[in-house]
Amino acid sequence: MNLETKKKLAARTLNVGIKRIVIDKNRLDEVKEAITRQDIKDLVSSGAIKIKEVSGRKTVEKRQRRRRAGKIKKKPKNRKKNYVIITKKLRKYIKELKNQGKMDRDKYIEIRKKIRNKAFKSKRQLKENLS
Image 1: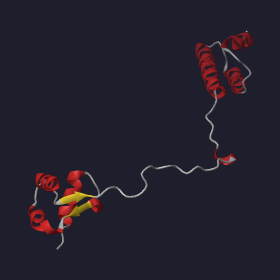
Image 2: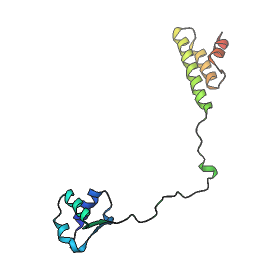
Image 3: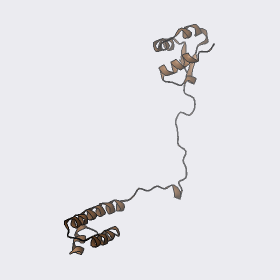
Image 4: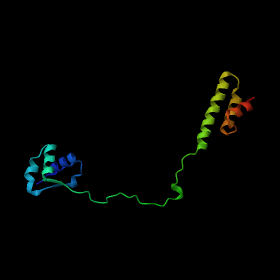
């Protein structure tokens, strides 16, 4: 007698796997008549349906692996972050000067290249170089 659909219903109702559901062979008629989730819960409380314990390892322990040179992942340091901040600030400043007409295009491109090469550590240094 195939009770696969009843097992599926019980598994969904009780939030366990199908393989953990065990049906008592002496009470198959009662299990066959069960239609709703409440019927399944009643059968579990009366003992017609039982739930097996979880088999296998109780605690999952991750295997320790040797870390090699290629597996080391480093986060970008503050140096890059600082570079991005100062570069954006200086580029914005020289763009303003160009838009105001205080700097021609050739000078603008030259200064941009210097900014990229970290020629200026601060906005103040850039201003001193321009004047």
